[in-house]
Length: 357
Image 1: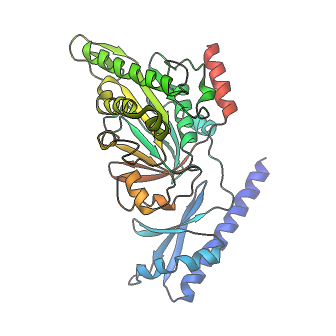
Image 2 (image 1 turned 180 degrees about the horizontal axis):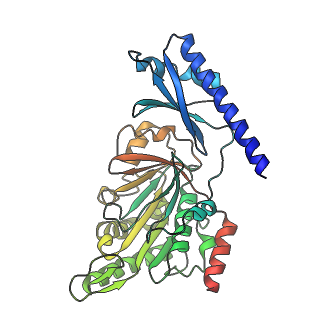
């Protein structure tokens, strides 16, 4: 096994050196003075650092993007400024999997109510804290095949692994009946996954009533400060897989419930994680969208859709590769990451073990 790893590393090193030589050959053939200064290998792409010589016009390197892609034998690549370098991202021929199981081996302890997303561009595990005042609710968007449902499943699984039901409760809306069915019987669930519009409205209505009860009785979620003679209660995370389906079937009632939770849920410790293909006004009202400070964006088709989904201009989401390649937008800054994957069999085994406990 050790010998195989050594051989793979040597083969990868040889491939990287060959690609770096091809990049420099294209640049020199056009009299562009720049060198490849190392790089980073991620599961989905290889990022080379280009260092232009003093006085060299950066625009000339950008203009050679297609020729470099042709020389490397890839359909497309990305060139962008990063600190004192130009970064050149080349998709890998055989992407390496990122699994939740491997990340959990590296993360012995994590902050409460902080779902795992995957790994960032530098290969470090990426988490997000729901109790943070700057997070509260998360909006996930992207086309079919971008990996939205798989990301939500990973987030739910990681929350169940690292949090006890007395600290965190979960509500799941899955009108398509395919995204969350393996979680049936999970001890953290306030009720079984909602697969009909009646069940979804009932779950959201319960969440609104619970929010109002907590406000009325001065009940505060774990990790917050109590005002006067209050009591701590578990946090609640509501996951909605495909908001468009909920908006179409649930109409105004569903929209009002989601909007109220988005506006006032944070103080009561109730958080929303909502996925949709296109976060347009027809799906989520502008009032609700304004209360989703964190956006996670997968592959979209146009720069216009990227702007609507991310909430910022020139996010580059239209150039994402799909299948778990995401941007998380936080405080107007974008972090690219590869979502971790968890197999359905692993989820069912986890549910079985947690129920046994």
